Image 1: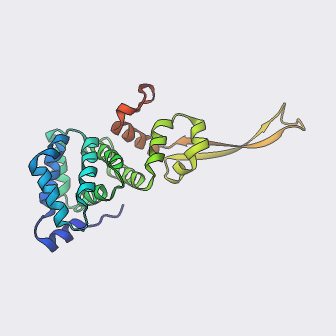
Image 2: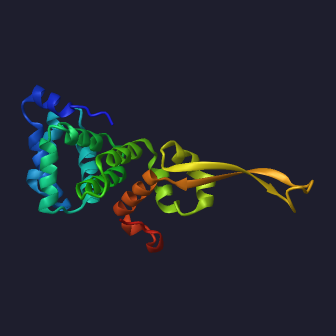
Image 3: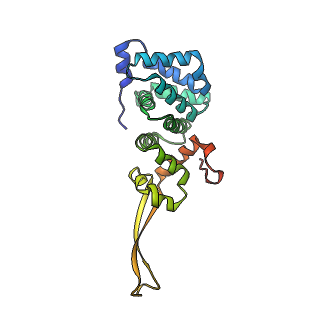
Length: 228
């Protein structure tokens, strides 16, 4: 994933809202989704919208709410890890890029998935490349296809008839093709060869499903719910 240092450029231009101030706001807000309703958080986001002229206030607020909802409450250890990431020389623009991704997401439903992925990363359940994969997948797939995957991953016929090829393009599934002969026997003159296509969830897809189910646990039948 290409990291873009957008935050520093805008902060340098305006001299009004350094990116570290927003990161601090982000960390405080991450403690509790309800904190977004508090005046310091709300006013900071309003200020962010005015200072970052390209940002749309209401859309960003909704997307940020979705992200915090997906991330859930965090411990002090979680928050300390976020602080370390924000000051790491190895990933100088990591949180800036994340903020940009939240802002540019097409819906609150998607940012809830991003929040769950970020939480799993902070908890050490996925590494940085897997997080990057999940951000890429969430940004590029239609939300309806994401929800179809979330609910229908266990149904082979659903994958074959609906979104298998889409999932292959995103490395969520792999496709195998074989020739099968239907009839009384291989040498039966009435035997007709048919192409059989099968889709299987890849390790990338499995990790993404766990993130989806973490974000939307309440919407998944218990027998199909995936967890760590």
